[in-house]
Image 1 (cartoon, rainbow, N blue to C red):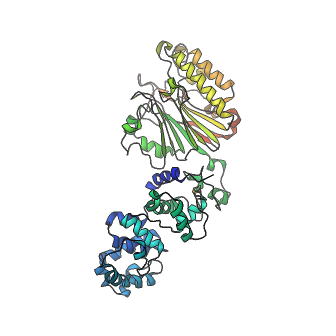
Image 2: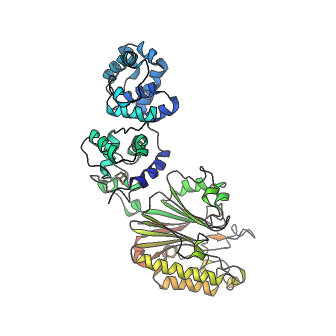
Image 3: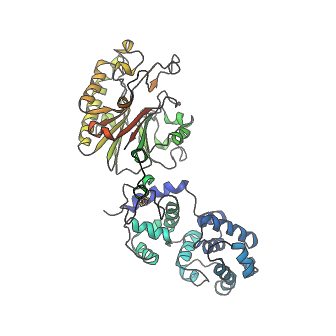
Length: 481
Ligand code: SF4
């Protein structure tokens, strides 16, 4: 399989936005000064970012220009930049730098690779980084992270950073040349670490061939099924814009799911600002309804899926954004916002057609791998699943016809995961906004995680998060091994 670089680099770029910015990029962004970028890059070789950052700060406080740098002695420089790696050599190179810049380049930092390579102590890595970061010109800076990760991906098969640079010059699309170093340095420091890569939380694990890698969880051999389980959460938010103003980000951080399936988002992504439709650490997939302010589904996922399937291939349901499916290596996650049958069961026929299509879809997918259906199915299955069953036998959500479909689903070999662990009454996921119903726990259990029966052993836990407010539904969750 060819490594899909065009698809995955934007995902990684998004992922590392929340990581610590590599020090040279930070100095470039803050100073916009090629001299400072050059000096910081020279200091950064074989040195931790925090040490480089502190040494750069001390040095620029004394020498903010080429002329001021020339006035410092080697001894001064050694004292100022200590403890960066090879500080004595670097002090000598920095001492020689102003004279060379003055004599050969008119007192300014040159912008091309060949000229930069003539400066004392400047190798290809430093020169390429200065060209890319300070002058925004096409150049590929290959440091240990870029060399290592490109080989792990099998995108290149090379023995040295120079060979990697030459290989990337031939095959890496030019739009990534200036950015590849900062993406992979941040990613290499934060997730794909040299000694113990965090493949367990890597957003591109589904695509990575992991060449030559012993992932952290395999190496340590101490993980339990719980450690490696994925936490899936489903929540009918009854309007994403409202819940975004009402603690959504805190809920996301608190639950920390690997995948969060949302229903009834009532928004199209272009109606949200960039800040509101971006969730650090997650990729967002949207299936809004055509009609604004109505229905719709979305999924936030830490893991990059192999494939995303929008809808059921049925225009009458798909225009309402009812179903969004993500395929992962060993399971399908089907996020469904099933229709409400409406008062007098006016929309029952539509709902029954939807349910038939959904079940057919699940049956096809289960031939391949585990299926996990989640979402607001808009039906309480049994009397135990609502507070007032007798009063609701003819009402939408508890009608004989809707419950019959749940019977059919279970008879077809699917498992209502919550009931695997909890047979108690009074376990609800939706409460009317009227009559103080939530406080009195007069509710319905209409939000589910359902799996195919053959995958029952993969289900480690299923819960209802009644304490989480913000919508008239609360989230439900599943731990899947
Ligand atoms: S799956 Fe592991 S080896 Fe591959 S990129 Fe992610 S962290 Fe690195």
